[in-house]
Length: 193
Image (cartoon, rainbow, N blue to C red):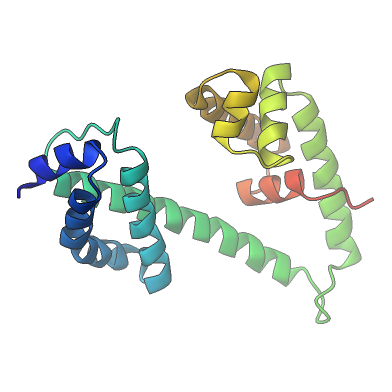
């Protein structure tokens, strides 16, 4: 059966059609993603996430062009996101590690810096427009999903996504020198003092 026919069947909930797509594309997609991320477990997670997303969104999924192109583009996009996330995380962790003493305890200077940054982040969060702040707090502090926030507030998931992105951009601008990962960490952890 060709990809177009399999996609049509999958849209109706046909698990065998999904399994056929999965079996046909898992290995080539895995190889494609591995070339980018070079870590088997990360590549496996990315490929799994792509297929889970396809299955979850099967009823509304509209693929223009070849399925293989869609899958490989999705793999490339997610691999790039993964790499960017790892660069930010590893850079932050390296900087934090460089500022810690041998016992693994942050130096007084690092603690002061983190407290100062924490205060700036909290001030920046408080300065967000009311609705944006509410959405940000529901996402980052109460750890609700975009879907849960949308349902709670009676808005679309796309609106939630845009508000979170706008909030993070404003926080980065207001706080300035802090990496996005640090802003996220300090906006969800309990206050240190």
